[in-house]
Length: 394
Image 1 (cartoon, rainbow, N blue to C red):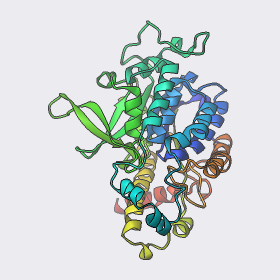
Image 2: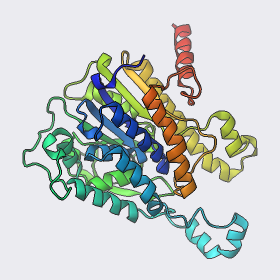
Image 3: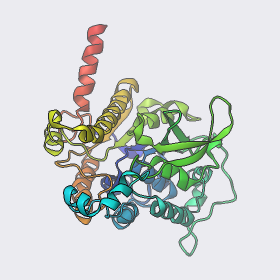
Image 4: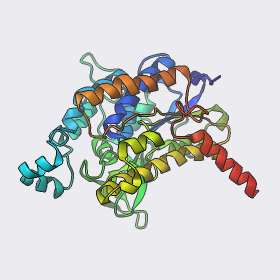
């Protein structure tokens, strides 16, 4: 029987996946209910929130005080503004090249398929509503209940009673981005004074800047060698090894926090954005021996990111003894593109995969699990095979 989350110190992590974040938003509605209702911001035992790409959007929304139902509405109503359908609704490729050659040239020689103006404006408006402009403001929002109450017009302003850094039971938002020039993941934290002046919208845009889909973002970050603040080119945090940011969330709550929580009091909740089992992957993508260069270019990054995401989960299970780790993931019959904001795709994400993930939260069905339905990534078998190998070597 699963432990009661209301009695646990919780670290919550959400994967990247573009529009597929909608299924997680739906599951968060059920998590709110499980924790007694109301915004997750108000659950003070939720100590750490960590997100990558679409997970950055969702965990930031939690830190602002949005309800999960508002997040669902945000994805269903604004997804098409972020990912306009001019791309996916073009005719078949041959006809398209024949009749739209000028547009084709524009696409292949532009830095990204979509601009980020719509997403930037959405984030700006949300930040204004909740009284947040920087990561430092997020620190105030998370750690001072005075900042959770709106005025008569439904808007929020931050209390003049400022919360210092390093307070006991400090709550933290961690956003992952990839520093392109350094070729490494960087963790931007609401409880780090060095990150306090980073603009809220820029941080989220950087984490969500999926290569070829959305443009690179420049952030003023510290150069570790010189200690100076320099313009740093950043892209989607999922490009690195933390597309699943659960491991860094676990480290934060167990080690890096001002007042670390004992492992046997901690639950790490990790949400994926759908997984294609092997048989469905081949049906959807074709047999690898038949892939041509363009198929390899499309599929190899996803294979690498997916492998890293699963090993993040395995690392927590093997290295964080005593932690209650819960990976919520759903098997998909057919992949949905991270930019597919069409009405049919949104309906499936919300009412099929979202409902399935919400049911897993409600019924405490999560990985690692011997059932492939609850553990489509195979964490149960990955952990057991790794333990056998370690035992054999010992």
